[in-house]
Length: 271
Image (cartoon, rainbow, N blue to C red; front, top):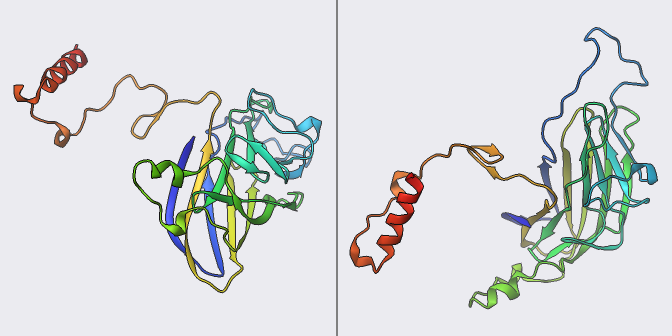
């Protein structure tokens, strides 16, 4: 599980938080001729709809069922779980992205390798999306949009306040589990040609109080994933860069054997 902590924000009556999630990489597309006109029947389109049996994805991590929601264009099919208590992976409730598949060059669906993506508030809270609706089905050529709305609730998987207490650390009261007087709406949109979904989340403060919150993102990739390094990209690189010179440490025999272990490691690496 990967947890990305966002900065602390002061929460006024309305706070708009936009995040862009890159769900999958490049997808090749081809056509018989650059000059061949595209008919209305074959023109790329984005759509939003309620899932049926025909929309269900393949793969060991595919969790979608009829009644979930679908965003789809010529590159991706994305499943947003229907409302309700849907204990799955890191999520306690529905309204989150649970499946994503990209399409091959022939338009076929590749296996799903995503477990779930969930946003959080104050680390231990998450939206309980009780209402999910199709905002725009994409038939007008604009991005297809599905919106999920509901109150703040408990993210049962994450309880860092208890975990860090064993180390003698206490989380600030504002960051610990507390009932926040907020409503959250997240709209997922997918445009024609895009290879990512845009999340636009609005947090409405229902009280007269101004307070600070932590904004968090929980991503469980699971499935068959590849190792990633910033300078090398995906996959296992055949050549890696050396450690920065400032990280080298002088070693002598007075370090109670640590020096010997370092020497052996360096000799093994050079060989």
